[in-house]
Image 1 (cartoon, rainbow, N blue to C red):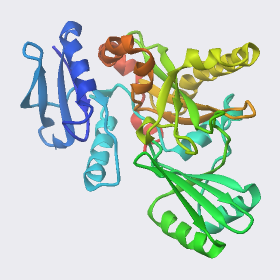
Image 2: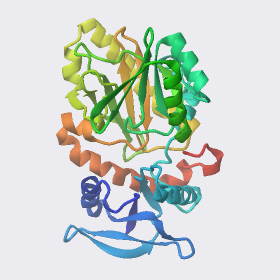
Image 3: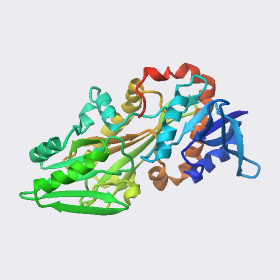
Image 4: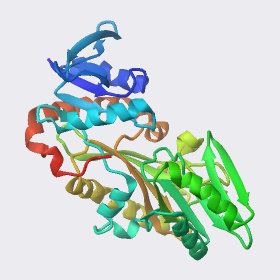
Length: 367
C-alpha cells in the first residue's frame, strides 16, 4: 500500500485538516504517516512519527521509512527548531527517490522579480529591498505613505504602514488582532526606531495602496487553487477577507472576517463587476503556469488580490501553503473535496512523478 507522508514541525499542528485527509486515505488505497523533519534518522532513512489507523480513526506512534510521496505543511519561524528543520527538508526535496506534492515558493522579493517581466507585471505593486534607513526616509518623503513588509513574512506578521505628516511621522501595525499606532515627533526618533526594526529582519518597501472599502476596512480577495487527480490546475473557491476598521490587514489571523465573492460582486455596478471579474479570471488563469515556469512544481497556491479605490487591481501575496478558512467559510460543502485533493494528487504523482518533476537544484531554493 502506498504511504502518504505529511511533514510538519509539530505532530499537533493542523490536526483537524490532517485528520480529515487521513480519513480519506483508505478509500484511496493509501495509508497516512505524519512526521517531523528533526525525527528523521539520516543513516537508516527511517522517521519516528504517527500512523493513522482507519479502523479506530486514531494515530499510533511508530517508526517507518521516509514516504516516497510527501505533503509539506512546515511553517517556519525564527525559532531554533525551524532553523534545524529547514535544511533537512531542503535535503529531502533534493532526493530523487522522494516526490513532494509541491516544492514551495521563494521569498516575496524573488517572487516579484520573477513576475515583473511577465504578462502579469502591471498587477504588481512596485517593490524594492530595503538596504538602509536612508532609503526608507527618501521613499517616505517622496510618497508620503509607504508599506514595509518582511521579505519572508506570512499571515500579515510584521507589516508596517508609515505616513509622513507635516511635522510628525505616523507608524501603524497590527498585533494579536489589535491596531498598534505610534506617532514620532521628528525624523530622528523615527530613524532610531527604524534602525532597531531593520536590524532584526530583512524588509521590502512598497507604496501604500488604498485597499479599503467605504467603511474604511481593508479588504482583499483570497483565491485557492489546487491541482486535481489529473495534475491540472483548478480554482477551488474565492472569498472576500475584510479587516478591522482603520487597520491595514485583512488576514483572518489579524481578526478579519469573510463574505462570499458573489455577495461582494452583486453589490457593485454591473459594468464594474463584470470588468473586475474578467480581470481576476485572467490573473488566476495565467498565474500557476508562470510560477511553475520560474520555480519548482507546485500543488496548491493561495492568491491574495486587492482592489484599490481607483479600481486598480493588485497581486498582494502568493502562498504555496495556503489555509482553507476563507473558502470553507463561504462554501462549507467543499470540506470533503478539499481534504481529498492532496491524496488524489499524491496518487497521480506516484504514477507520473518522475516525468513531471525536475532536478531540484536546477531551480531556485524556496527559502
